[in-house]
Image (cartoon, rainbow over all chains, first blue to last red; front, side, top):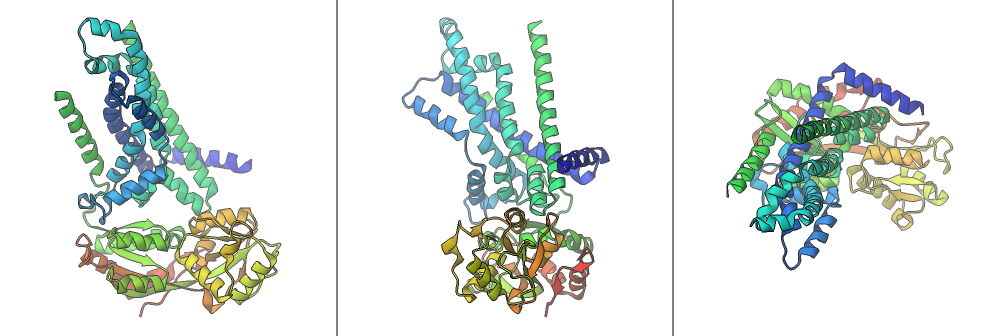
Length: 235
Length: 273
């Protein structure tokens, strides 16, 4: 138990020290994961909403597939993205391997199904409630997507946060496509993996504590922003 | 239509913003290397000196030797800096690399718990020690990841005439991970572990483990450096990569390697010709 107490003290000390290197790693983690979540939300939300309202053969199978993709193993995603971006791969000319962009791409692939699947669920519930009304004023099924997304925006925050949680906590994909290069592609999770492998368990645990702090901060900020917006809109 | 355009723009902006280089240094090379050089802290000590002198930033991808070689065979890297001479020579012979140079060496040791169930403490014959471990069926944690250390370990088992993988999952346990991870796992299950001395000295979670076997010439661990062949992969930054190799082999580079110490102990011994 002493180890845990020491780690917590270590974590607090690290935060208070304002260590420039640590902050650079924290900022890179946030930059990569927030960019990935933003891109994944822009693609995933309309996709999930469209799947919720559209009616076509094979829809149910597609929903099952999308739900299953929420469990994509990060290491497999990392491997596939590596093979695409490698100089021996089809997208090698882009020279993105071992850059933050490669890490963002991998995380988008991981996060997009989560946001799409959860958005599908939110929108489908709303659609059941409003579809008759919307049809009666002449809005087509796909045409109702923006309205339903807007209406479900507060519930959709949860989908985005679930995606963010996945992205910020993930190590398997970013370590393969980013290479864990010091000052270039080293993020919180890969640093924790590295320090663990060096046997610096207390430091690794301290970094883990900081990562959890960051996750709590982002979630609290989002929830506060959502709450404020909700009050403003419903006042 | 407008919405689609908006989304595409947003995505492009996101990727572009993210792709912007993190550091101001224009020139960099990617070195495919091993966990031992990174986990021991050598790179953190050595690379800033090189970058300061030449302005070239060195980006290290530290993986097992097997994976480092495969990555370099895909053209993903400018320089290969690993420790498995036969595989390195094959890499050059097949045209993936330009030329191989000796850089430095250290040695492997076998570490174990003080209870020493196979009774190998103090032995200097590595194959005899492995034979005793196999006979005692004492737990042995292997990298099992085709790394340089794993290749060296398998050569020793072969020299002892033993196929430990037949007992995989019993006393012979393949972690399939890096050196540090294997040390963490092995020490937690009282297993013997073969490790390079540098990683062992710098390792922070030794517990009560001790070095049991050392000093066998078969435990010699040679590191080599190779420029990835620019004729084969036009993306290779050959000039900067060669500058790095030249520096490693120069008096200055060699002295820098020799001067790296952890707890007063020298971890790597330069031996460029």
